[in-house]
Amino acid sequence: MAEIRVYSTPTCPYCVRVKNYLKDKNIPFENIDVSSNEEGLAEMVRVSGQMGVPVVLIDGDVIVGFDKEKIDSKLGA
Amino acid sequence: MRELIIVGAGPAGITAAVYAARKKIDFMLVTEDIGGQTLLSSDVENYTGYQFITGQDLVAKFEEHLKQFGVEAKTGEPAVRILQAKDGSFTVETKKAAYQAKAVIVASGRRPRWLDAAGEEALRNKGVSYCATCDGPLFSKKHVAVIGGGNSALDAALQMMHIATFVYLIDINPELGGDPIMREKVMAAANAKIFNSAVTKEIRGSQFVEGIRFEQNGVSRDLDVQGVFVEIGSIPNSDIIDFVAKNENGEIIIDNINSTNIAGIFAAGDVTDVPEKQIIVAAGEGAKAVLGVSRYLYKSGA
Image (cartoon, rainbow over all chains, first blue to last red; front, top):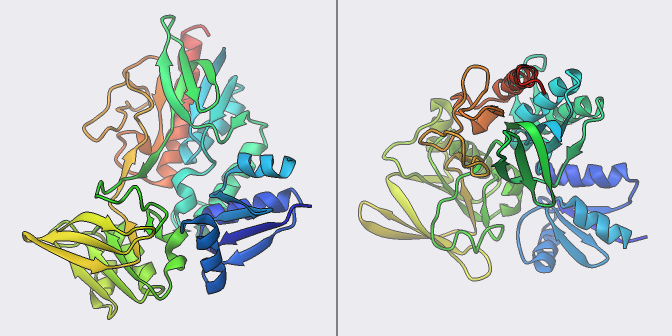
């Protein structure tokens, strides 16, 4: 099973959508709320080189935004 | 060839899809995402039937309603161009494919207006944001600038006053617009400063935003900030179609049954010249557009 991290804020709509998408598919993931977790925020900026949320990290590969296709292709691979 | 393609899935496009499904029109929906700008509305208190609902929850309700009909919805496939064929039919090109139909409803909504300042594009998502609701919480204990002077800028400033250490509001107009209640709150805040008649010229930073430069009364000024929220309104997503009549703001001109000047092309919601940009208005316009399409298909013998 792929190791998945979602860097998100509670208010960002695409964060909610990406999390719901994974939940609907019964895919476990670790949610990191970067609005309250400073280390998590620093880590997100470091791995993605940017400050937009959500960021999805799948086995070390970075996906910025809610990009269904990229998520599917990473999980299918 | 289908009878109808609906372009966009905000309140106008989704409502159109529900009506089209119930009219048993042979149609498909092409869109980037479900919800459009409604997703970004924090609190909705004026959609009949809901005394209070968040934009996200309202979109979830819309989506639920849509799913009930088994609509052919191509998400992740925004229309990039609409073309007219000689026989009066249309082709909608998306990122991935091209689809033909006898009629099209353009319900592609609006997108945030860019500042067009130096550095803006390179620093997008690197401190430059067009959605304080989304990205605001990342700027805790930082200095930020909000560009704009209307309600959306005031709303962003008020949100950021609770998150950031200090908020600069950079307004191009001599006086702030928007609702007086919001204006007064920003003006009274201890951790906010307003610059009027200020034209933002540059957002600077190497990897992330480090500051902004603006001109005020002919004087160039520089502020150190780590975040810049651009809230200067929106522009219609009407560039995908170049053969319909638009007004000076680029909005597609429609009549009272949502027809454009081109037979078979209908439009609904915030992409049109209907002045009220409201969720409930867009939804109603989507319904009207399908009823117009239905008559059009019947009359043209389709």
